[in-house]
Image 1: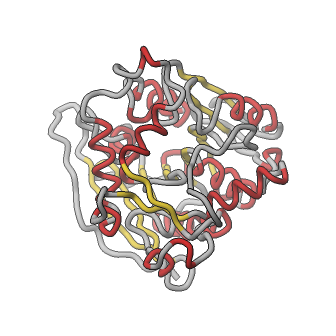
Image 2 (image 1 turned 90 degrees about the vertical axis):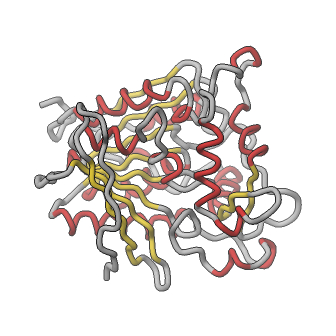
Image 3 (image 1 turned 60 degrees about the vertical axis):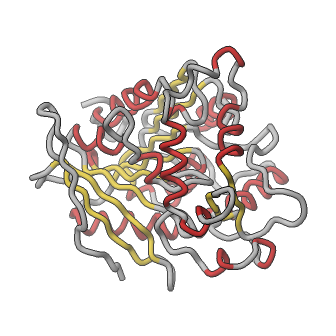
Length: 344
């Protein structure tokens, strides 16, 4: 059963060159007691919907979808820019993130409960939203666009539910880790959730950036805007001193298990849709070597493309070369392919 709200807001663009955009928000039922927050944006008056022009953003391991994909920078968010091209664009927050249900484990100290929001639980949330969109728009498939951990969940989802996926975009793709895990969780047993403050977030962001390139990497005010938007999604974390963003540790538990066994929970050979992998050269969270290894394993994708961006990190989405990322992804979204991955 799907439970959703009526549209609650609309955003129009002031630019004469840009179409007016309409925004809707929903809550979609997933597991019992879990509601998933969904945001949708499309051109005003849009009446035709199809698989190729329907996109769902899936976020990473620590921060919600809206503070990255729908953060206005230079006057427009990535969600805005795709919608302006005539696309029907969605984002979701996995349980425990952003505006989705925060399970009761997050009201207790982290050590009182084991990690939650594992990939297995995330797949339930993603599938609930995919089915909601398919039913709402009368389409069979849609495009998945994942970032970081979102590339792991969308890869696994495509392996298991490939008949619901039109294309797959993997920004900062995850595969088997050969380097230390970049997310710090402290000493002792892994608890249900972790907290990240702005100093920790910035240090992780700049890890691997040459010292002489740090000053010009992030345009003025962009880090602060992103951090404020991320914290705003977590009022309890924001009320702490210093303010923090709380995130479930299910992804950490999965990654530790996978690193110990040297095996992921899916086989890239089972992905049979067109795939774009895009990564920046200074990414230390999902290094380029990881993306290259994954690229070679996509042996049954009818079309696969690998793009490496210069002078960028895991967070290139909010850096000076942001538009390189967005433009390369848009080119892939705009292409139409037949069943063999050939342009049509």
